[in-house]
Amino acid sequence: ECELIKPEDTAVAMDRAMERLTAEGYKPYYCHGGGHDLPGGVAFVEAVEDLAKQIEEPDYIFHASGTGSTQAGVVVGLDRVGWSDVNCVGISVARQYERGRQVIADFANILADHYGMPEHYDDRILFNTDYLYGGYEQFTPEMKTYLNKAMRETGLMFDTTYSGKAFYGMMDMIEKERLQDKKIVFWHTGGIMNIMK
Image (cartoon, rainbow, N blue to C red; front, side):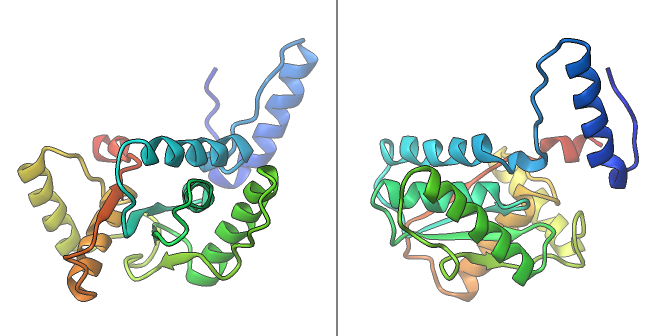
């Protein structure tokens, strides 16, 4: 079934659907936006554990940061594999600095508790809001031109909302902060559906 709703009515519609499906004898599972729940965070912790089996420890990991579940999972995963010195930089796609950083830290603390880890992440989140350009789905002509060139040259798809915004921010930070000699991983978290709309 598909129900069209206004974004501000999402929580009410989800609760109503959960109640209706449960009353009909089903066992519905609530998928939180952006995977911002324990299974979503655990998935990224496990993804870091898998990454650690494939590569040497990098200096930086860059990725798009929206709801915060990706970054929280990655930073907890880095600690679990002994890579606590890796700089995990989330490029914000929507949230302002204070709220975005706090949401990530709070969720990382929940994940750490889930794993029985004593770490507290309140002051350990690297959250960059320099590439918001006004907010969610906002971008500059320069970013769009850069991403189009990157797609032509690499064959990788980059949208202007998620991974593309993060890739553009990462490349700019590499230049501005002279990180060219560092081992850097870019974690592409998708966004291709935005290109198709």
